[in-house]
Image (cartoon, rainbow over all chains, first blue to last red; front, side, top):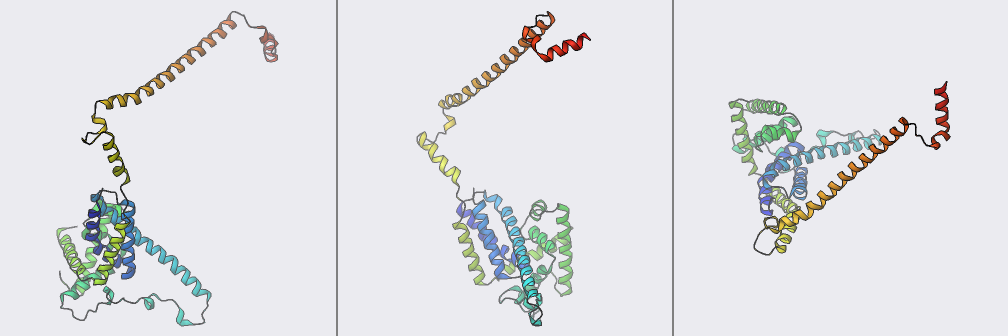
Length: 189
Length: 136
């Protein structure tokens, strides 16, 4: 069983990466923080008595499920918003829902970073962040689990609920897409 | 994936790790608060913590376990012996019932063969109908 200190050290070692992982997926820092907090609490409440070696895989599963739950809730909420906006009629055209209009980059988030200074190291890092964020969801999930969270192919497949072959395909495509995107922005790693 | 792709992937990983250090301080403190909240709700390990002191108290403080003592064989036998006796009794009852059933069937067969049927058999309407049908 993981002691309090082991659990604390584990959470501390993964919390920042988990936050970025969630932020890549949901694109809102505040929501990403909520997701990470939920995942941490679920891990501690339900699996706090598990051995420390099992925590990384359990936490990743919980984190991915919490991200998926977030999208489900958003879908339901958007359905109701669309329904009620339809009931109000077309009295005011400016009320029509537009994702691009409602999406605002939060101050301090990755999307709000400017790309004025192309030569600075920070901008290169932010550009890489942006391109990772732009990857298709499944590709990004596989790529981050495999190469950022150090999961092997079998563990990644178990977390994603797909075959090991699919994981390899997603990872390969993600790498090619990233390489192509970074090259087109003049970034060489 | 070939080595070139893997190298590229690990360079991206390095860049992502470097970017983690640039997270706003507010985000870091919020994550720390979330961690503390999670730790305060940690599932307690009820099974082991409760059981071990009880066993230790029952057998003194020399650290010897319950099953490592000679007396534990008596304890085990006190559980196993009644189970064996009950099982043997059930098997014996089943065998006795089976034997009695075979004996009863044999007696009926013998009575039919020696034509020693009881009178009640001839009072039965079904049996009379059977005899009439056989006579025709």
